Image (tube, rainbow, N blue to C red; front, side, top):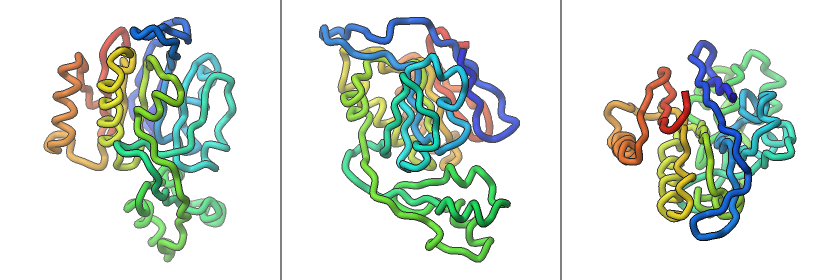
Length: 243
């Protein structure tokens, strides 16, 4: 059993029971593909699935655009670290994140700021916190990063099935869910790409009024997913044998 605890303290636990199954499966087209227990997009370097003891027995992908964050995570035999950002269009962009030396020099900075790396420009909330210290955009490092579509991820890592997708992508959550659905449509011979549980953040939009989110909710409902507002920020789409 994998217990996924959202980052903010006090949030309720999400418990997902992973079935014991073979890691290599035969797709409908006859090809051999892999079953993954989880794909986590936006790991930062703290409070991630890969850091939990139970992850030792799981197969997964840990995805983050900041290479040094991935380097700080443990190396597990069946979990691959993927450096890049997930989007609807592949290519290259830049990730902006606070220089780690700033945290060393300012230990009072909240830890969650480490998770505020952002594609395309500095994270608004991170910039606001930094400005309180009299610092500005020069505090952020800017690094070129590869952008992958979910289809790219499926092809490169031979994903045939995944139990849990967890997304914490600082405002890009909707785009990543759209990219995932596009991959499900692109590979109709891999129905297991329709993960049994999908967790995303909704702090960048009004989940009761945002047309883009409501459309996604409708599309997922048509695929048999129920929508659960589990905290002030987290949304879980669930189907199958999860409790």
